[in-house]
Length: 175
Image (tube, helix red, strand yellow):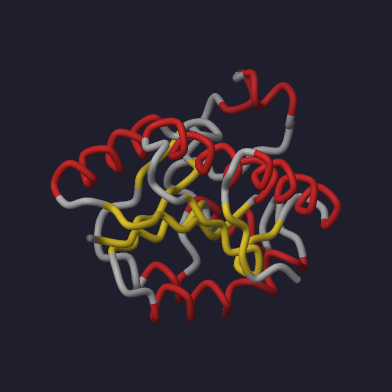
């Protein structure tokens, strides 16, 4: 049985760039420690937008260009990027169908004991991908380490954690 850690969008723009927060900056050392000590496979996701971001539905609703492919803001935080052993899953939107397929395939190759999520933002991409994983693999325990996540605001972080609990996702290490 294997354990999987999914590191969601730990990119410069979400940490201290265009959409950064002090809460996001604060979790970087905890996420690094979690990755270093994790006894299993680690998969990174990377929010990836193109130059036409402002013309997309997301760009119209969140008119802050961020994570544009090839920019510094798109890069995974350097101290975490060095721990990335396989190509990140580039995702053009909040939840990644590609990640869901990757997890299903991994489970077919070797049974998954649990899937743990950490990263940014709790209330957008972490919740979206945790729920997608739950839909793809409903009998695999899905865990979110709240101490290694941050939301757009502390309030929306807490709201997302509560919503995930209702959806039978285990929330650990709450602040």
